[in-house]
Image (cartoon, rainbow, N blue to C red):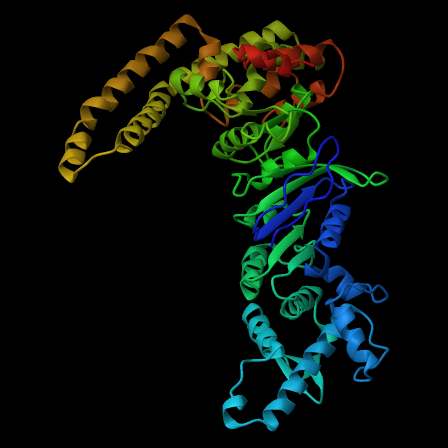
Length: 529
């Protein structure tokens, strides 16, 4: 079905969407998504069919007067005297419609010939079959004109009205979809409501299969659900002028490679977006970077691969927004070539191995120590000595870990080749030993790392030393006047300083930002307050 889009502020509406199977309407709270969907449904006329589990289950007084709706179908039969007038709510009316259709089918079969008795299953038959697939421990019974539920692990049967909200919603969606007109545009409000997140995507795939002739238009706040609708066009509603009846919105092309995190950034961000590692709860990344880069909307994504992909996807949508996205990933054991590549794609890599190492930058140590009554320069000197000594003790193990990382990168790159025959591939693989010589790489790294120790290159050691326990092993909290043997003491002290507005807060912020130089020249303005 072709879908007409509402008037757009500042210009004409896009052309109608041709033969669209799925359309997702997303936007921030108050952006006008519901009005947008209602306008589309009104323009679709008799081809529109609306579903809302929330209204069906809990709003007993509202009625959908649209031709073909559950309420309208019930009303037509009610006027003929077949139904009681006191049945309220779309869910109860749907149950009555299913029973009525079943009764009519049974009467036809009773007086029909043998061939006609083997007719196709009724809407109630199909509803029961699919619902029991979703809830295999339950059975639906029809007895004395009532729909009853029986559980495998409990005696007796009970009315469908006593189902849980999730069970009722699924029953409502199945039955209501079977009453939708042919080739209808089915407008579903909040399809994620009452649904279990783990099974929501599979359930809606099955519901869409139930009516392959229909177009599904979803208005949703659930970005996991939005991302699960493969092949869907996405309307991003940014605002609404109800008096003029126009909306600010854009249409993203089908299969735009966006994950939920990018949808979230698009919908909620009003500042440039900074995608980072960590989960926002157990890691320091989100709390730290939100205080350091205040001009950015900071969004933690978990893994470094998700950060890199999110930056690429977000910046690939500049036709639909005017924001910039950047990312931060830990340096870990990346070499200068890898770091340069990431920085060239707006993914920043600090000049320290991991985020905890930022707490050991000289100016950060100095500021925390002075804030807790210690001599700043003495604290920095003591931490420096401890770090160089610890690194010297673990130098060969660190060189081995860096060697493993580099060889892995070389092998993955070389194996990912195009060969026309297995013999050509074997010859190609056979050259790997000379290309990825682990001992040579290891020995070169050992020489380099020993030079750091000999020259006292504290910054270089922070850049290559991956050791989660480093703060405690170098006694950083104790030297800064904090509680010893507390691995959270130093990060928490840094966060407390950054939350302030004094000179020490600015010194810490400047030191951490300095660890991200060089930043691309064209993006420097984005990192300033």
